[in-house]
Length: 337
Image (cartoon, rainbow, N blue to C red; front, side, top):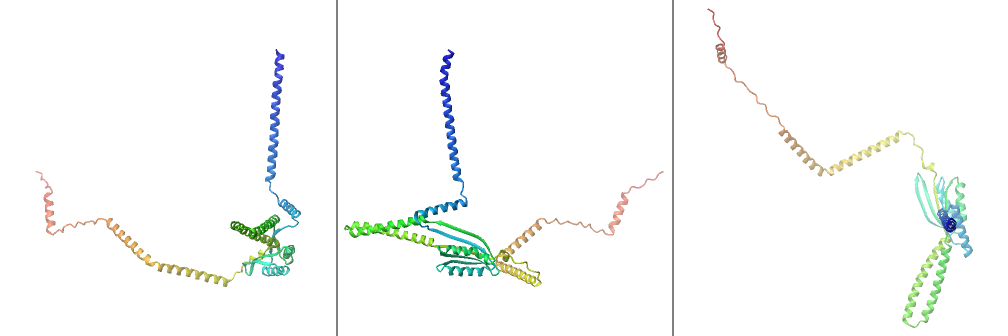
């Protein structure tokens, strides 16, 4: 009997062991999958550093260059420098850029005064793409050559090769469709066909104008780059030394303060005179009300008047009569026998 029970128990244990093994395998597979998923998510969430971004941009430009044979880039340069005489430096830089690049244009020149004959000067130029590296190199070395300091240099590069190629392709396809429509309208006989083809031709010509405008803008941006130059004076030049003690300056300051004080008083008097037509009636009404209330209170709390008693005057006869009456009222002494 025991042998039969052992025989029947072995398959049960085997099935349970296989079931447990399947659960363990499934759990390990899910954990590995979740680990891989979380690892990929973490790797995707890690931001790219500046060298990585530059490397990625370089790879993208190399790929576009390999596919198209030409790169279309939009570049801009922002450079800030510190020089003792900003006006002279700005004039020299403008003259050198316009001499080096005859097609360069000054888009904006702004002077902002920050001190006594001291200015922050901002200039923007559009220069040819072929001369951009030379101008950039000159601007970077200019402060050191003129006893100044280069503060910041910011370069922006945008690769628009894909957009440029797509725009050219769209323009090419639209012009081909325009030619087909012109051929169809010349061979159309029915009025309805002519009207339908003419409507479609109008739409295509409008799209062509729009695409050509976009292409011209891209061509201008990739042919001429923007350079912005900021020239500013040193910080020590903007902070003047403390002025020495001067009686004349103190006298002038006191006179100025007295004039300002007098002007303030005069202003107050003028305002009071103008508003006196409102102030005086109100003041009179308030005074009358106060006087009426004071008189009423005095009448209400007035103390009662004390009455004085004046005794009647006594004549000469009245004292004698009173003395006699007193004598009669006194008892007489009895005589002993």
